[in-house]
Length: 129
Image 1: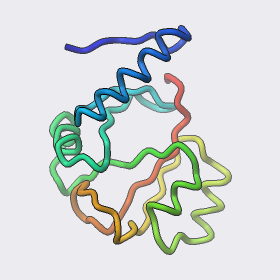
Image 2: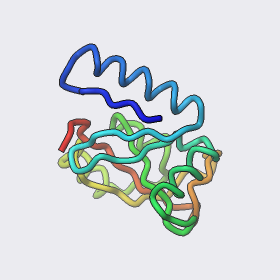
Image 3: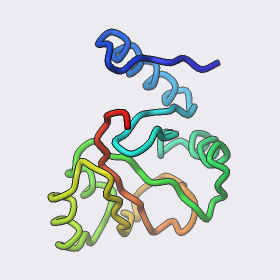
Image 4: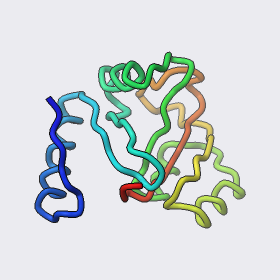
């Protein structure tokens, strides 16, 4: 069963964040508002969560989902050899709808699909469209 939370209401927003954290910890998917869409999300380090997300989106493993980050500095922990041009784009357009395709850190222990060496990195504005 799905529960809706009115993000413009402070208490419901807080309750929604708590419910989303619990769902992600339980390896389930969530629906979240961003600046461009309502997206389906899962913990990128949960194989079960990622599989559920791909199934919900009707995607196979050749269409890996983007990874949403909460701050641009996170990009350094997820990607390697980040070009200066990508950093400048991130500085100019994040948070926002910009997606950067970067080389994933080989030490990451997730499986988002193929190609595993690439990472779609997004720092969305977390407000409803």
